[in-house]
Length: 630
Image (cartoon, rainbow, N blue to C red; front, side, top):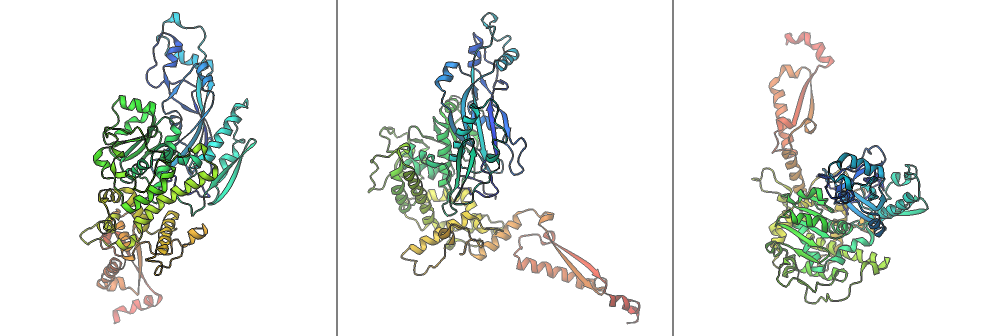
């Protein structure tokens, strides 16, 4: 399985800071979504119609070899479609709005977007062209003006990148907007050359991109600071929106792979909340549908029978509720009201291991919103019930400083503390996981990754009524991927694997019970450099890895590129003279492959191709005329 990029993803030298620049809107053509509206006047008809956004300009013009342009980007810049406004309304909303979104490809790779939206005067020729095509019979001719009405339309500058450097991309959007409105001509490829051709900096370094008279820093955290989050202070928006119990409840629901919808007024908050949640799943990752901002035209996805994490703003939410598009099994998280609406039966299963839960609660409580004084007295807010009750020695009534009030140093400290708290939770519950790795019993012909992990034995480590949540957690695809990353051999080490396992080793070396017996080096944590040899310890027992690899071969259909060809050269005419011995040699070879490579579950006849070739030596050729004399 190929791990998708996420907030925990690592930048590489092969990735660019920005893959594409685009401008989206309707300035070239008005295309209605659905039928054109019929109103008493042309202006009212235009103002009540929703239009489809299109890509009006993009750079580079051709797709990059490593990643294709996303033509649907306009739909995510304007999730409700494009609505025209009067000059008065445009003036009242003259301040541009910066927002963000995430696109997920079919192969689960992600493209991160930042955009800035503002209102521009719509050219009268564009309005007139639309009227000529759509409004001839839609309005009373006597009420039609001789000139098209003066209207404004939103436009967007968009940046797309495979790396989630949101803070830098949003700052670039602001500067590009300044350059755009102060120039009489469109931005040229030369003006954007540095932005579109600069590689991401190496771990722990910063590169600067010159845009006009502004230098924008692009920084990537050190390799030993996973999960990597490059959203700046916006990382904390989730914690400012939800109280500590709701944050942990939401996090636990995602680890249990439920259907989750984030709701809020501001699209950017939805994206940042979703990205923060994905980062805090590390070393696990969200493997399912991921749409932090769901456009109105994609509402049908809410009916998907699979886990998902989506975000919908209040307008799209109203439409979804009006159409009855939100199933009962969807967890609804209101970021504006600090509420989680969840099936009580599911909520009551969200009991985490008690010791680890209490430590996590205490660590992140200072950064979270104060408890909602207006909590639902009828108990309808199921997720705020007892599963996430605070430890008895935690005071959560203290004042919480808002993100806007925090200094840069305080923001960095808060982010570091929060990430460390969630990482400690996982390190604690997964410590010594090698002790519960097993070789599946022989009656399991095609074992999955989870069959190599003794879930029951592992669950005995924890106290409290957390078995339901642990079962849901280990049954999910994120846990399966975590196991696969350790069971499957790789040509090069995975940073995520080395980092997490070194954190486990560091914990064991700090423990009073094990520090005298555990001596393990942690070079990645110490230096910030990924060792070429990868993890120095034992990822999984050798027997488990060998059997897993054999089972993976058995699970795959035998194709030509997966077959092994063995060339056998037999000298002095043996192939013709002693065919029984040749057949025995071939059978012996196959038995040895089956025994030594543990391919016992594979059709050796299909997977191993033995080619027997006669090789006549010069001596044999000389003796051939005399063969009849012996």
